[in-house]
Length: 370
Image 1 (cartoon, rainbow, N blue to C red):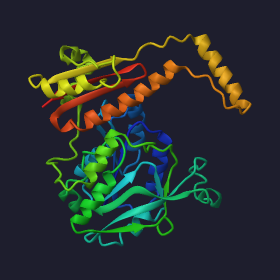
Image 2: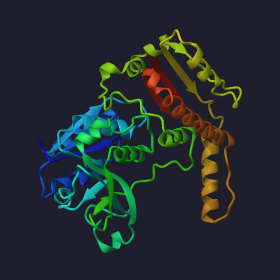
Image 3: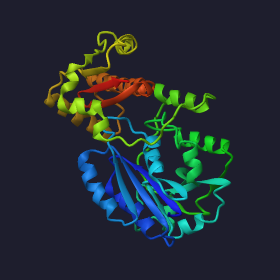
Image 4: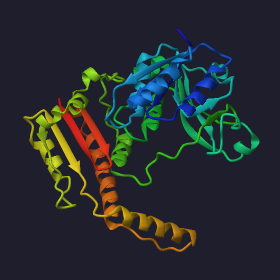
């Protein structure tokens, strides 16, 4: 049994950051650890590339969760690794991280029967590379920030059923976990990057610019005093237990009950979806297939608008041509996507499976009710 199980979650990220992170673990002076890499439904071409990379490191295990068509859930992904872990201490790790060679040897000091540790990091600038990220010039530009790195005794983590899998897309799952670890009797020890160096590779922020319906639902869940309803955690999805995915791929979803958007009225746009989901209780399978109206804008007109706006920008003039059809379509895409996060997020517990195919011209949502 290894001392540490390091667990990371992944979906459709670039391979270089994966290699940088794994290289920093391969260089550890303390080698009594395993690494579980949970690929949470990457596209198959990405999976085919990252799997041999991960498996080239002798300490690493690659696990593919068939969650294509599901929203990203860091909580569920890490729970899969927690269930599979055999180490005494679980290290919940972001694939963006790199550490010093003695990181694991220093972690053997705390009494994990009494505490769990969380870690601040050097959030590196975009110009950082694997060769220069420790230089003074780079570190002066780094931001000292909290990162999702947590070390906790595995038995205690499993006793509280890991992360709450209510959380999906982005946010709040770490805070929820820390609250429940403290309720279980552990003290939180926050470690600064200057004390134990952790480096976070740059990427564009994934935090929402403004809170939407689903984000506020997660915040309400976080601060709610209601007991968590999670009898099982970290279930590993395979193609065999994904009926919605299979129905979409083989085209049989069109045999299910169709639901249409009320496209004629923006205020009532989503009413039919909610109405059907609440009233049509005798049916078990549904699908929504929606395409945006085609834009009546010629390629030449688009080229002219692009050329004109570029020249206005070069001359630093605050005047731009706008295609109102494109603007309205973009707003509609944003609103529909926000609604689907809320609609799916608040109903997953009653569903057997769902599959969302989101594309530039519309979307298809297939779901089966328990």
